[in-house]
Length: 350
Image 1: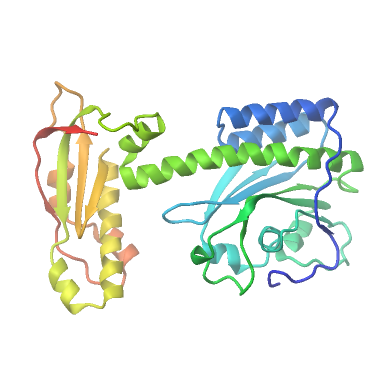
Image 2 (image 1 turned 45 degrees about the vertical axis):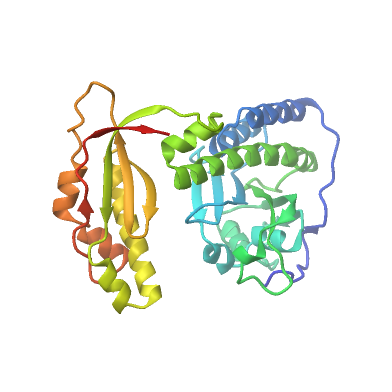
């Protein structure tokens, strides 16, 4: 189903705000504390579902999802099931998100804040493939929510969206049960009350994690952590004892002259992936990409032997692992071994 298509049933344009009382108030307070301390999304979802079960709510599945800023992915989903009692993380790209019609994608495209479907009527047609799958697993009731932030994703980052359709930012999620007759009215009221504080806790955790990922990607893991800890004033820094690494891709100039721009950039990106994996595997940290060159460091404790670093010798002898290259660029010949500056211990200011 395309975004904006009308559903025959199940739409609630805006979620009501029932009064908070009893056990629900205690869970709201707990969610606020989770948000304040920046608890991970999986821990928050697992804790919330455990409280539901302890309070007698017969929940079998719960999901939260949101858009992310990430070098490789565009969305993140956490799915909790009663069988495992764990929230499993799954990253998604834009093609993944758009591939199959889903309640979450529909709500983010249309701004619909709630969808509810009874699944225990086997003859009732369902608009999304996911709902048919849940019905086949014995689910009887499904409540999905969308808590909007009031903003939309930059359309330049979502160029394949239909004309006039914006990808709204917010937290989407759902609750499902296999209990006969589904959720009661009282349970539905409690779930609706908990959507806003749950969304706040998820947004707080997601924002912190995205900051860590982006700073780690563009500044390096150690420098990114320093920034998040408040080391942001000009001249602030620390002395780091490290072995410095530099390598570039042999044959890069010849490839740039003979290959198309698309092939060259794809080759360079694949080369970066392989080198970064090798550096990470030995406890190093990439500092900078310059042209086809990679600068990295391998920190060590002052007064210890810095020679315990096999990357400079082993990786240079082996070059790019053939299996890693074939997985990244199966149609492009593997480049020669990278040149590596075998570095002596140095002192870096960060």
